[in-house]
Image (cartoon, rainbow, N blue to C red; front, top):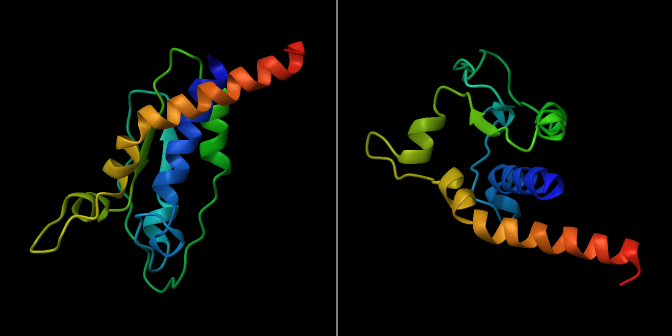
Amino acid sequence: MRAVHRGSAQAVVELMQTPRGTGGNLRVDTGFLRASLVATTGAALPAQTFKPDGVKAFAYDAGPINLVIANADIKDPITAVYTANYARPREYGARGHAADRWVALAAQRWPQVVQQECAKAQASVASRSGV
């Protein structure tokens, strides 16, 4: 169950973070939006962030998110949040701009992701037990 819980969370984060240019739905220009993703198991959500002036490119580091997922207890809800100040208008659309819906599209795949993670866990157990 732990493997499915953590693996499913990780897989959905990877879906959310996949840029349009590589088959995903996340629009990436400077990388600020992508780099603004944070994860938590607590109730408090992180503060909104604003892109600093003068910075041309931002790198995404999956390490902190992977650490939150790896340390999550089975009963902990894992929340992944984009903190960029323009994340919500990008997701839902605003001021005449169409919605990108990259988070919603990843979330819609949750049942399939869990099913895939269950199959991986079952295969791992079967291979260890020689079945």
